[in-house]
Image 1: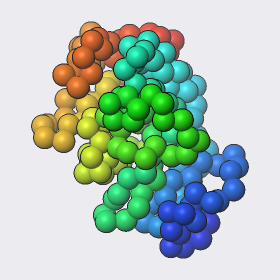
Image 2: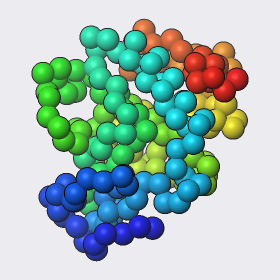
Image 3: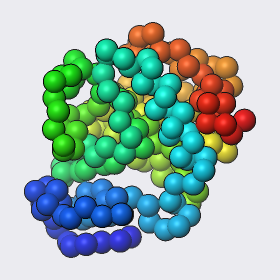
Image 4: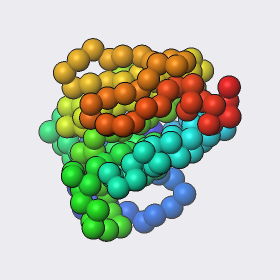
Length: 190
């Protein structure tokens, strides 16, 4: 893991200079989000990110914001954690529409989406999804471009894997009616 300095405080982490590498704060260390060339975003990952941004932004009009790779201030194992999800949806009820600050998301969002990169395993993503849920994120979607699936993690129910024409409907996201097939078609990978 790429490491800048042991035992960073939240303030020290946010004071780090910006650069080409995206860091997350994990266990008081700045850890590169993409640890090697296998984990850097490739075509499928980037295309799925774009497709999800388009599909979710259309639905989110007037309801909330959809943001790509936005740092989120959370707590993990009783320590500050700044995760950088591939996509985040946060409603205006949770973070008002007039909140306009150039900083990390200050509250847990309703939805975090992580796309499995080459070099990552589904097991690693299950662990991260569990950490998000323990930090009060309401839903986590893990996208697998190889299997063409979306696995939805809930704080109080068994995860569900959706594929093909299965609808990603959820009482938390009223009116959202997309399918994994739509996501992968929009991304141009099926």
